[in-house]
Image (tube, rainbow, N blue to C red; front, top):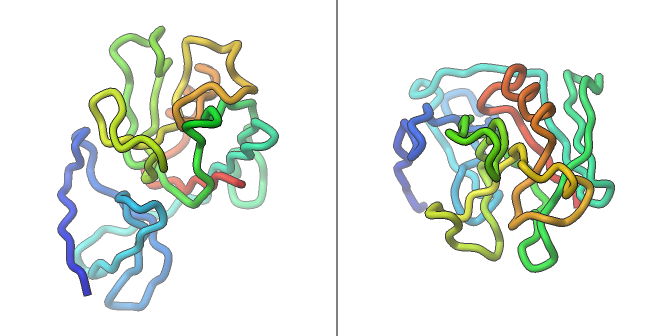
Length: 177
């Protein structure tokens, strides 16, 4: 069995979180924020603090839409931009790993950026980072509703600001095929 240590805080200074997939009492199977996407591992239940959220985010790549659910109830929807053909937004199950407020709120990443636990299937590095995916605002709202990114999901600055105020690190995100 391979063993790996993942440090906390992460590279952005955020407390490390995982998404629990299974509870086996003494051990928790968690989704890991590493390559390849969908990697799972085990942590001792006594080594972590558990928190719950009823929220989840679904991204429908084909319809260029997101929906935030509170349990079974949709509480916010909007349009998204996804990855271009050469740098697609990969489908899968992810979670928010950190929330960043860019210095330039009118820049490429908009008002906020939530890092995701997944990575680009194409880019091994991007903008000085490891090719990590994100959901973030934008300074080009006209691109929303198209394939315009390097794999990240872009939303309006109003939508990402709402998410930043209402969704916690660790919130599950599902990107549909």
